Length: 351
Image: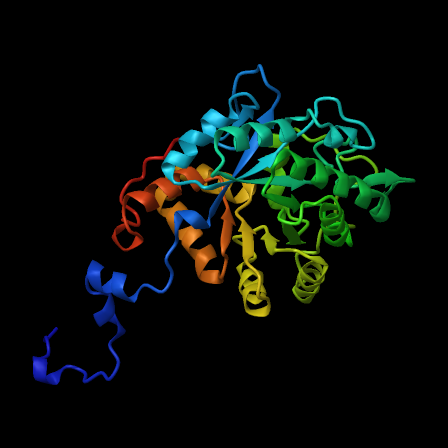
């Protein structure tokens, strides 16, 4: 094949590749910059006096005893993590989820320990009953159905308990109607006007939560066989925007889309529609899938981590809950994103 002379080449008006030619040029033109401050690390708690437990369903993740969680978080802070989100449970579950209201439960104890030892750490707490109920649902089960209004008082009392322990944020993840307003009113009436609310405003009834349920060791579902009467239909978009608007009207300081990777359209729509921070949760199934693919040699885990989290930020997320937080924060604090290799090391990172 005859190679054309330079004078015979196409005279193109647009050559976008010019801006991709070198790392410096790509850095100058990069539109999305991920920061360690964008990351929130979910942590699972167990009672004091036990040993840390590896979580079989979440590679590299641990259940931390309350009396060791401050030491663990000091290490995470050294990597650049400034916010954690705490998930607790109760060994003795009952139909009312009464363990959620125990002032000596794992979450209140962990909050007190963290705020005493690490006052600069931002602490969020999950507000939902499913880790505490014997039927595995996020609300009170009455006559075989989840009773929305009967659940609201318990959620508000749970949020107040966490605020009294020192939580900076409470994060209702239950998807009961009206819970943000009831929680906000309860917190304000008791003087906790500075406690923020991160509302799981658009939490979908997703199949990607399985490893998380294993991490919390929630009870098998009884009564309704799934959570579709309160979590959202994955087919719906406009409904999510309505839920988000309701939560902001009721006093949410930030709103969340969950899951993350398959719902980036909702993240962008929420960011365009509201004037409060938008959070996204890279859920357990997404995390586990990437690990499984990497173990089979099908993708580079480090590159997948960087790309997936950057895409959340590009879609509009201000806060990203991810189990990759320690690894990603360490990378971000060591070198600017413009210099980060995207697919150099296939080795699976470990804490």
